[in-house]
Image 1: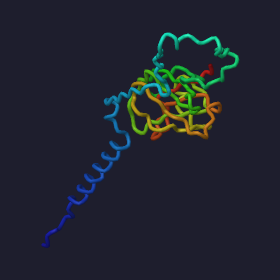
Image 2: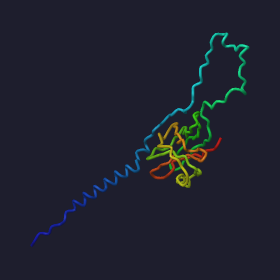
Image 3: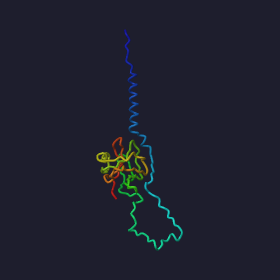
Image 4: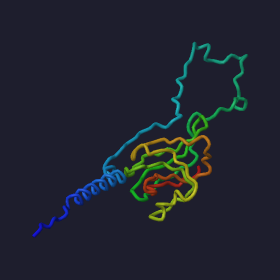
Length: 201
């Protein structure tokens, strides 16, 4: 009587193991769960703030204006651009998918450029987080998690850290008056971690 040969299940087991490893690695890369326990703190100074000049005085006779040199009145002095950043709008961050606190300010710098500044930011870390300037309303709860890519938005770059004070420059061709909110946006999963309404000052 001939011997019956049974097909080995080893190749099937090897393929299943390889597929399991591939799926696990892809899942780790996609979700990056370890970031939830990693904090990145960034502390950036407010740009465009100049230290006050130290007044210098010469000899006593130079400190007193001569009678023949009238001092300029305030109405005749030329106007100068502000020497410090001007706050145009601001608001407090609210939580969306992750607990998020801190404040946001939209600033015009002395050179005429604009930045969004995050102050005292505290949110969760995560994959592919961005700072978005948008025209979407800021809504509480799950209703506000996914609205920020429904209308106009500008990505100001990757979130530098999930904690601290940070500056994000607006492109020169972007009019800040067209936007009303800022979102900490997870671009990988299309969800807001937190957002702030920009109330005009």
